[in-house]
Structure formats: C-alpha cells, structure tokens
Length: 78
Image 1 (cartoon, rainbow, N blue to C red):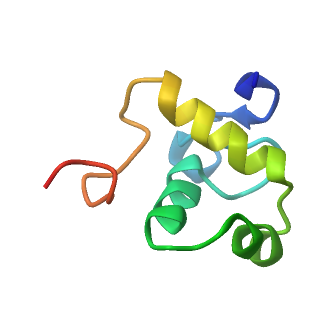
Image 2: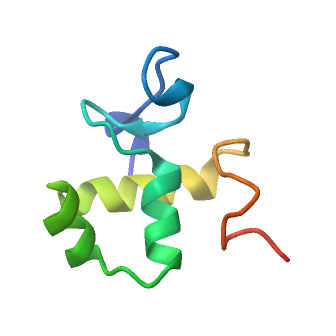
C-alpha cells in the first residue's frame, strides 16, 4: 500500500498531525480507536471513511517514525 496517496500533513490542520487526505481525522485517532477495540467497520461508519483510509493509517504507522502518536497511545509500551 502506498500510504502517501491517502495521508497528508499540513501545519494549519490538526496541528500538523498526519491525517487522512481531505479529512479532519488523524492517523493517531484512527490507531487509538483500533487500539480501543473499534473495528474497521466502526471507523468507516462513524467517520465516513473507506477501508483504504484505515489501511493507509496502519501502513503509515508501520513505516514512519514518530512523533505522530501521543504518549498515552495503547501502541507504546507501558
């Protein structure tokens, strides 16, 4: 998956956090929701996303070093 087609960062939107292109939902938010037990279908329905958006967020997270994720994230070791 080429996440660059789906993910963007602009300083004036969401404080410069990586987000779904053209949307106001961050990669961080998507990953946190998945970590809280939300399903792909939950995200699609709640945020009007496509499956590709979720896959792109996961691919971005797997290939780009932080700080795109907060310290309280369930994806960091505790």
